[in-house]
Length: 267
Ligand code: DGL
Image (cartoon, helix red, strand yellow):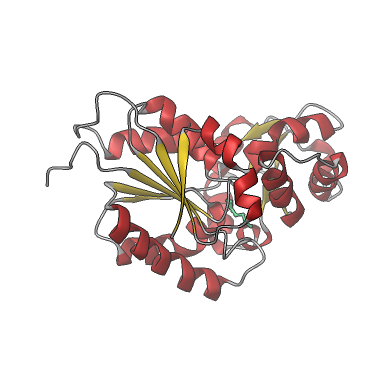
């Protein structure tokens, strides 16, 4: 099937986290038309049940695909991907890329053989994470910690609000204070919000830690899934669509513009 050159790539997250996936994708495909969708009415996902996420995400993606006719959907959210990716794929007739915690690269690179997985509460309890750890890090101690406060920190940062350094410190302590945490050398940022506060995490770390996430890998996957397709000759302003518009969203406008998202709409 031929894809129209103006057909967008649709990125989906509960909030601003997916921008950490959008950024490397824009570098790989600079003229790709972009629709960035955030489920602000359902935010946050990390404290929701599996059943809620599995019901909500495919239904929303269905509405978004109907409205924007994207060539590809990217679930730029670890929580939604680890729980609902199969349901979304079953519901849509376009390719869907998910966001998988970067456990394989962490296992490849950790010298101490102790690494952490920092995600949402919902992500770190997923059997999918167990499987990745067993498959790629069988000889490693894989520590896990869920932080809802770090998700809020990333949202606050993009709204331009002052940040409390204790939030990043507490999130890291959740890993470092576990048995084996004193040997941890690598942290998988298994929530797409967390690369947005990587500088705050690095500043809060008691010693240098390597932070890994999947953004570049997903950009390569997007390029591969769309290879041979036509793109516009020059970049056009992207659209950010929210399931609920409020004052907080207005405060995101400058940050969204920095990611090429000049238009804001409600779903
Ligand atoms: N950005 C999301 C993730 O990657 C979820 C954050 C949230 O809504 O709790 O898991």
